Amino acid sequence: MFLSKSDYMTAYNCVKALWLKKNRKDLIPNINEAQQTSFDIGNEVQELARQYFDNGIIVNAEPWDVINGVILTKKLAENHTILYEAFAQLPWGAFCRIDILKKNGNGWDLVEIKSSNDLKDEHIIDLAFQSYVFTNAGYNIKDCYVLHLNKDYKRGKTIDVKQLFKLEKVTKEVIGKYNEVEELAPRFYDIQQTSTEPQVDLCKNCVDCPFFHYCGKDIPKYSIFDVLKNPTADMVYKRRGSAEIKEDIIEYCNDKNIIDVQCYLQNTIHIDKKEITAFLNSLEYPLYYLDYESIMPAIPLFENSGTYNQIPFQFSLHIQKSKGGKLKHISFLHKEKTDPRRFLAEALVETCGKKGSIIVYNDNFEKTRNRELAELFTDLSESLLEINSRIIDLLIPFRQRALYSPKQHSSASIKYVLPAFCDLSYTEMEIANGSQAMDRYLAFLTGTLSDEEEKILFKGLEDYCYQDTYAMVKLIDVLYEKSKEETN
Ligand code: SF4
Image 1 (cartoon, helix red, strand yellow):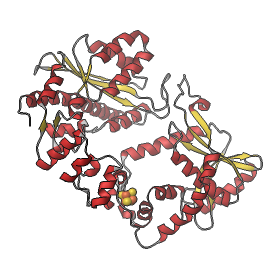
Image 2 (cartoon, helix red, strand yellow; image 1 turned 45 degrees about the vertical axis):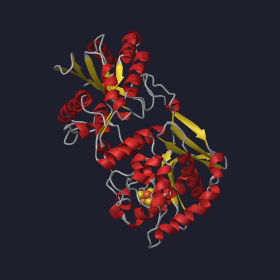
Image 3 (tube, helix red, strand yellow; image 1 turned 120 degrees about the vertical axis):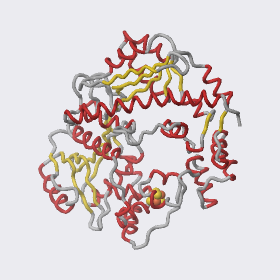
Image 4 (spheres, helix red, strand yellow; image 1 turned 180 degrees about the horizontal axis):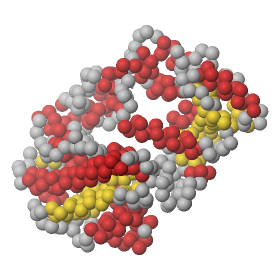
């Protein structure tokens, strides 16, 4: 059995996760769309980052063919100064593949490429393991670097690779972790080989683990992990050995969570008529219900955009002149493979009128996009900022628990709020969430869709974005309805 860098990182977070990964492959979930996207981003960044250290040679061995990879690395290291994807292995099974192995005098530097915008602690742990393996495999490692994306970079007509990336020297930090790797790596190797599953206490962080469906099978769908923050959630779970929501957690709850717990235990809906009425009174007709969809490419696709910048490409707008009045729908979707921002900003200014509240769900997103557009297109700046001044956030009454249903499971996200009060649903839709919209539109922009697939995508995007604004119309109706009901 091997201990790869990814095994080491898995065990660093939880040794049971490593054991399950190696001994219960049947429990490993299939890769989902979001994980695939993250792999694709990693590969794309990796390819481009090699241009930062050009004239290197790739160690052309299959990732699982470690023995050949090690032999080939040693051979290539005799005549080359930059190797991509170089292998090293220790006799007892630890191995890794460094993104860039670069000659430095009589030794070598290790460079790990990361698709994030910043240096993270986990990058140091990752490099410490690689430095440990390469050093013990006989390489004289001089310095260690992380090459990550540069969040301050703005793209010109073409990509400037030297500016797109930021090279950070982390030799000192890696050395600081060296003793830890020496101790942990052989221990992790032994744990994965034992026949007994390690016992590890569940905690709130487990909710995000791919093995939670197994370890957390006795945890209720709505549990203390949804209500309480850490470290309280872990402390309570440890003390009672159960994640069930009961009266006893109220002492740890804030005002909002007390409402959540009481509604759950009594199976009732909480209505604060006064708060709802105050919110509704702040609305000024005509109402404009607005929602954006955007992409967030790791490598900037358009001039004047940076790494992971949000680029809005679509909006849906429902307009209602009077309370309960007829709806008019306007849809904008940029169907060209060009920068959508100017087209979107012009369409928005043209359709949002001059007066009336603009209702969005979670205003930070739309307001920030409008400010960015205003900075970019100074001639539209005044109109875009004026739109921002009319924005009202429909999230607020739900986040403040002016209206709360136990079906929300302590969440104010529209994906939870909507089914709690309306019969509208996102299931069965061609595009069912924002990240799907993002991924598929990016696929369109990069030209990987057929004409037929493009047609299906555009229809799916228009249906999805329409639903987002129509959902807000329905929620305003719900608020009017509930404002007439008794306060409990
Ligand atoms: S769910 Fe928790 S205990 Fe189980 S493998 Fe994952 S992190 Fe470890």
